[in-house]
Image (cartoon, rainbow, N blue to C red; front, side):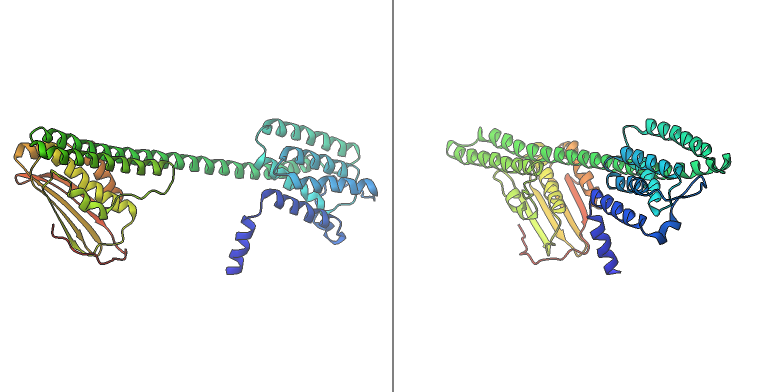
Length: 385
């Protein structure tokens, strides 16, 4: 079985042109093996006689066009059909090379694109002429014989046409799949842009507003913080550009949570429980975005209120919880995150997890549980904020 698998793999790597040439060589060589003549196709039941050089030319005219049956299917079929008809009308000895007609018919049905209707009409008319010439030569075949043989030839054409149709359907399916994947990627990048821009711009606005009420000696510190937020935004935007350009840029993940929560102007407690798993990049990015979006909403609607971030690492589950204290009005406003919270819900659902967001006591709570089963873990230092 392994040898058969290797043979299939090698055969799949052979181009169609090489396969066609190989088939032409094999059929041509077999056509001149006397013992294989009984396998050949013959029609008309005319007395056979040796044709000498012309018979050889007509046999080669049937077999050699197979070398281009995929590249030029109509031309290959036309040459093969004319040579087969001449060979049968002149009653030259039957050879296995006559089977090339069936290969050529199948190839025309499977690969011809531009002249399909014209080819069918021409071939049908040519068959009528072929049958008439056989009758003039004294063929004992009756009308039923001609009809049956025409049906046989038609079946080979239809077999190729069926393969062509399935090939086209598969191409359409792949095209639709690619379009769906592109649309999904655009939606993901739109969520990323929303998260990055909303978070960092909100932080910069809140810090700039607060600077008006600070003593002069604190202003440089706030300006430095605003600069840092701008640089972080540029870093993440470069990452998104890296995704678009397939540069392999790294995504922010759980390792960046501490830098996220320790920005000036925030009162946030970060607690990590358990052993951090080696998570896929999409899972780490989703966890990071959950915390980022929750803190962004807190900065907009409950500025200055304490918040707590808890990340729990379980054997098969990643738990994330962000709670913000504040009056009921602020808690209600936190629920209006709109596109941000809806996008997070979509992200978590795509990973097979659960996402909830809503008022909790006198504040607001965002939580998510994301499966991490069968992912190896690595020990990390615990942090209690």
